[in-house]
Length: 50
Image (cartoon, rainbow, N blue to C red; front, top):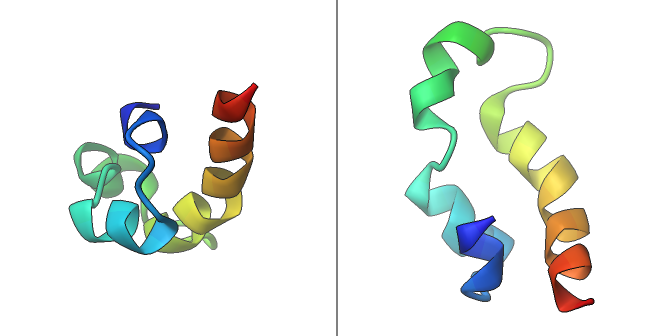
């Protein structure tokens, strides 16, 4: 993702709310947008290092 490629930390990426366009449709389930981002972001960062 562009945020991971920019080297942003999870905290920085969360503040930018990259999922805001999807929150209305997908953000009301058991996993809230910030929690979803936290779950996947580190994996994305690690994969971008390769």
